[in-house]
Length: 373
Image (cartoon, rainbow, N blue to C red; front, side, top):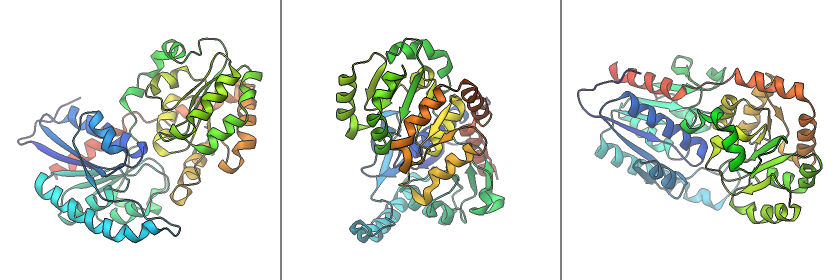
């Protein structure tokens, strides 16, 4: 990899957050920038009181927070504050840009990227959007008219963005995931599933997923009956209940976790994965290449997780169970998949063909070309 030696320090703002799906690609892009540029200063901008204010400093980057949140589509008193939050965030974004003087701004989505990208575009600073989903939110649709490039991970995105600005890059995935394949035995021992049974990994995103958790809880005895191992990430709110159920079942190889930091080892240990259908999760799961059952969250803008999942189903790369059906059908589908080796092999083979491993580098390369222009 050739490192770029710049005449002066390159200053870059990366803005995005709210969920791990916005934070993980932002951090991956930052790490790629540091590898490619010899003298660089990075600043993150996120939303106050959101997880990026903790997660970004944990990996060594500075971050500033804006007083901003999303506009609720249903009636909510919180919407009364939205105009004031938006104005406050635009003013704060102007201040941040004036003081930091960035050469480049990259937005990965989330509440904070809107005001920051809006101000950077108005000031003529080279700006790039990284859109993870197959159906973008209204903020990125509006911003795309003003930014220089829009990096996407799905086909046919010209429905939403100016065609001459779209670049297919794929979604960045976490660096720690890239070497997961060498960690299967280590992962099985770490998660105490060190036997010959099929191991099922259940993840509902960084905050957990209530419907998936309830579906597993209601049918936990099926794991014992069918001799299945279970690595179950529940999130905070469901953990005490899941721990009680697992203790009562008292079966070796079935365990529960609030949050799994060692996701590389969890992926390595798993034979089948159940997950929500967030765009970054799907990008990682394509690389991991394990048989996959997706349960899209219905509580997202424009139902984009269903569209993310359907794009895999259409390519025979994953199975999908609708959220509303999951309590009755999810574990039934899982048990059927466990007994169908040829389907597992087909799903695994097909999903691996969709993997993109160098998305962060692609995004950085095209962003740095904007500076040369």
